[in-house]
Image (cartoon, rainbow, N blue to C red):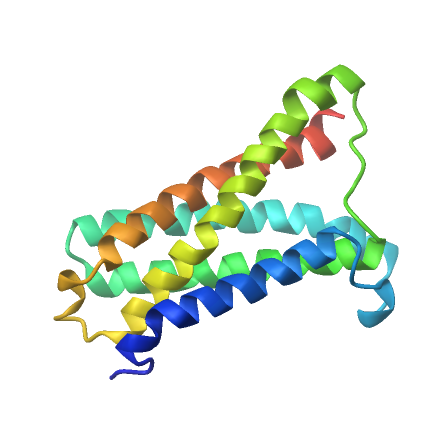
Length: 187
């Protein structure tokens, strides 16, 4: 069943990407006041990074499962794994943005300045760049999967965009775990 018009996949990808990234950059840039989100106890705000690293690890598993499933021709397993991955990504993002807005900005790096400049910042920059870059690929692959019947999907660019999205996603989630470890494990 077609839920999205084929002609609208491109424009919807653009709109969803711009809106999603605008919300993320507004939150990261302190443009969303903490008063717009419900107040949470400190323990809950402190737990979000730990929950998000578990979400990231789970997403790495579901993305890998989805990738392996499609290579084996297991389309229903692939679809379930990738939709789960997208749901995990959305959950991660909601929690991350909530914490970012509720606490008034990103967490300060607690380690030494040299580690901050030469290790943490480059890893964080690549993580953010890949996270931003994967958004339109994710939306495009997802919207194509919704817009086309299963038998027509191989004739689209769904697989090409999906491979790019999955690759960027895996690397970004992995680097996010390294960022977490630097913030909460090493220092």
